[in-house]
Amino acid sequence: MKNGEHVVEVRGMTKRFGEITAVDHVNLTVRAGEIFGFLGSNGSGKTTFLRMLCGLLRADEGSGQVLGHDVTAESAAIKREVGYMTQRFSFWEDLSIEENLDFVARMYGVKKRRQTVRQSVEELGLAERKKQLAGQLSGGWKQRLALAACLIHRPKLLLLDEPTAGVDPKARRDFWEEIHQLAAQGLTFLITTHYMDEAERCQRLAYISKGKLLADGTVDEVVSRVGLTTWEVQGPDLAHLAEELRKTPGVQQAVAFGNSLHVSSTDAAELERAIAPFRREPYEWHQIESGLEDAFISLMEHSA
Image (tube, rainbow, N blue to C red; front, side):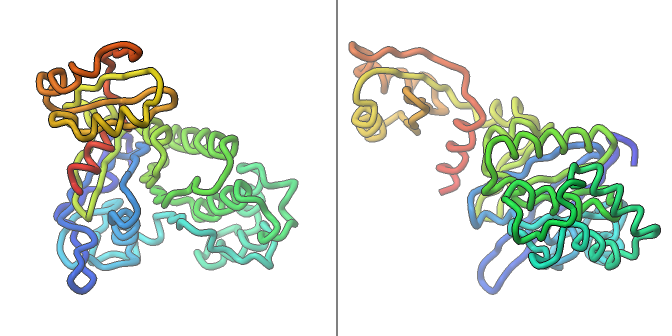
């Protein structure tokens, strides 16, 4: 598919488990060649939604297409063209990297299987470890093996469910470099994450809470739509100050950021009146631009 065309275009996607609605009438569009971030707290419905897209779960309501295939009626066709990386490492720990990749290639009926496995090992920097058992790998190398396995059948769309959970900062950075290189080659990504720095690496993103999609767009669009005004305050005993501010009408959130507090509200005038009694020595106050984390904390608290 050409960049800009819709790889995912679904409407009203809904999934219920008994009386619980895990995904509640979600509309989403993802374009070809895009890195799309999908954010939300634990239990928000992120994983359920991914499983619906790749055909592992059938939607109770909703319609649309994934890679040109009907999302409910053509799940088998979707599975052949999608790579899905689960939250937990799900490969065989008593097989080597090379053996795991060969097994996955067999399941997909990959042509020129041995050649494809060799290429995959080389492309993702696994050649020196290809004989190592998967169970002996660190978190970062397991993540790289999982990515290689997702790519073995040359999918057009990758669904990655919190792919960097539990890996060190360098492995996270290297992983995202790989993602951007693959996206530049035309591969499309839908990635769930808890990390704000990773969300900011995405071209567009969405936030889901209790199954409902609360915001989507570019980082700037999402922050703008939330409409927060934010002040930064520095000084001594910020924990006590935060406690006092949270009790003050007109302050919607007071959150620690390193050696400062971010104090925010969607009503700028009301916020300024609320913080006026606290704007005295030994504290220093400055109005700042609201960031993505400020916006998502606001969305989370609003949904609660």
